[in-house]
Length: 246
Image 1 (tube, rainbow, N blue to C red):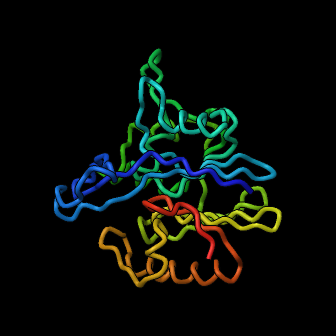
Image 2: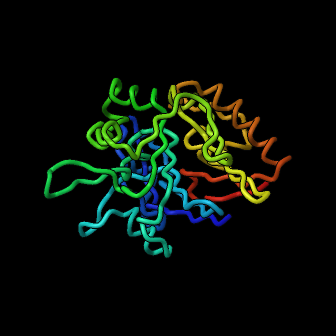
């Protein structure tokens, strides 16, 4: 399988949930709001024998009228129309901002990848509308309720025999993770339960998680299983190492 990170850059985020661009060569983290976290925002494409998969969709920023995630795909040699499945770990705004775009003619938002099938946990979508701002931008998500290109999953499942989806909660109540098994290879995307390499190596409990202790325990479990089974890990928020095999 081929893995393509689609980095949107580095950002700091504080308790207000605002994502502010951070230039790693120039900016000083100490000048940001106390408690600010430095993260990468990095969707991934995985090319399998069956599909071109997109894992999460970034912040949804546009430059000169073009969605950044679309431009990043084109720069990587992939037409956005070739994405066949969009796999959403959860719907926090830094993971779901690029799943829809505004149609300037209708004034409504529509799926940014209309040729793809989107896979979203049904209860996560319901929770997003219940919880709303600032973690969720419901205007971005409205079209998920209306499209026949969206599959609302109800708990753990396997898609097309090779994409294992597991609801873990932990970061948010209905967060899911994915294990892709294709041609003897295994690729794991843990979303925000397993966002950075360093967190896999320590007993780190994050205060921003719905259940930080469970997140920590799951990371330890996956780290061992991944080592034994030679997984490749995809880290959505890692500043330095997007892909790792231990």
